Image 1: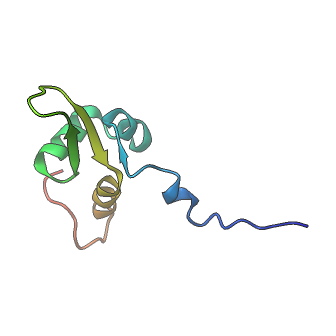
Image 2: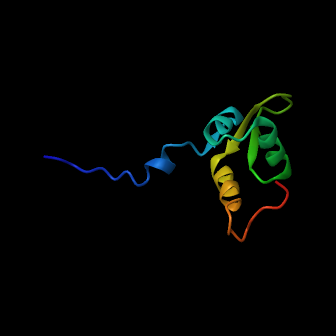
Amino acid sequence: MNTVQDNSKLSTDALPEWARPTDITRLFGIKRGTLWALMSSGDIRSVSLRKKHQLKGTRLVNMQSVRDFIEAQTPGNEKRSEGL
C-alpha cells in the first residue's frame, strides 16, 4: 500500500524558530555586518542568552523576523522598510 505524505509544511517546519547568526548568514546570504546592523536597528529580532552577571552569551536570531524583513524588501510590498 502506498501512502502520500503532506510535505506542504516541510519548508517552514524544517527550519528552527531561532538560529545563530552564522546559520542566518549561511541560510539567507546576509553578511555578518549587515545582519548585526539589522539587529541593532530592530529590523530583525534577536536575543542573547546568558546568566545574570555573565558578560558573554549565545546570540540567537528569530528566523521569522528575517523572513519578514526579506519579504518587506520585495518590489510592490507596501510595508517596505526604509534605510537598507
